[in-house]
Length: 298
Image (cartoon, rainbow, N blue to C red; front, side, top):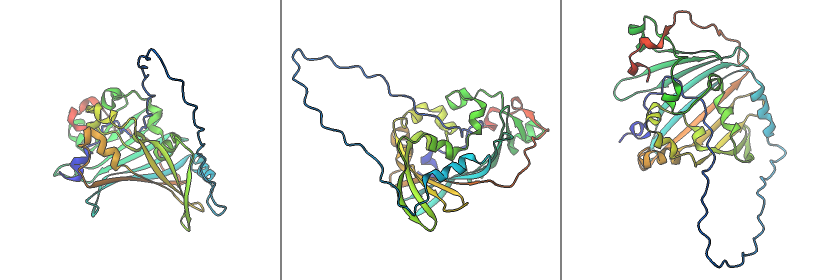
């Protein structure tokens, strides 16, 4: 089994699937029946509070990350890579996103290097607060244009969860950090900046694929898992870098079929704020999604 087949990262659903999904609350626990005679409860041991050690004085303060949240315009890349036996790294998926939250406008280009034997090429999605457009060269013959309006697609059926249009405008790396379950922990400071770790729900680190949407048990397998994200804060006006080891997450998908033994998987993001202004004009030659064959969009 190849790394690509093992990960099951075929083609993303036409909806884009970049919106994060919060882990649901734990199910109610039904208490077991009490014995007729209960022993006296033991005196509870004091619980030590876990407080992250303060970052050294020369560290880039964690609060520096606020500048990335405050920037209305920016660009980020997401790269998913896998290795076989630790010796071969392969890019499974790459996304490039430009956004202008004041417009609002988010342009997402998805590149899957290969899908089976044939190159897939790039797909482009444009999200606003009122529409979702897809650029797909495979739709040109049937629709007369590669631009297709996907706004009215039933995303609940595709993704397996309900979502609002505005959720597609989320800046994914920052959205992931919004779900941190603990305080950032300083790891080291180098000339490149300061590295921190935060723990987040594991599902926040993935893009939901059409394959996972068709097999909800794959997604359910990771709902109780967590992942540790490394965050590198630059010492000046540079780019924010994030990375996470998702080997265990993919390994849990489908009862272990999600990742072959000995393989590893990593996802990384690089976010650059305050990029120059770019054109956010929407295309006018756009067809309705009903012109496409169902297999064209997924």
